[in-house]
Length: 77
Image 1: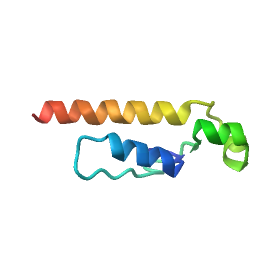
Image 2 (image 1 turned 90 degrees about the horizontal axis):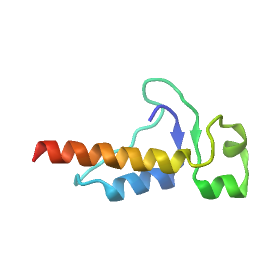
Image 3 (image 1 turned 45 degrees about the vertical axis):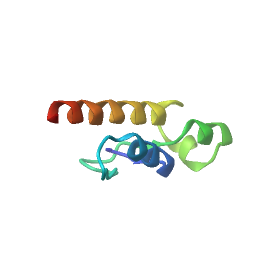
Image 4 (image 1 turned 180 degrees about the vertical axis):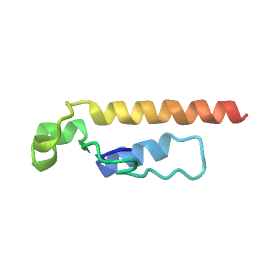
């Protein structure tokens, strides 16, 4: 991920992954921005206030990561 996702998002990606071991790495290939959860946007705080990304970005990150992991898994089979 080219930014900093909240740890809850990484946990969601790992739990849904079809692989036995999945690592979620952040700030790879540059720095994008913070990826707060929707709950964090509702609570406010530093990261949601500083990011250029809109509410829902973290959930999209999880959904697309899981879609890509699933596609890789199915191609391997």
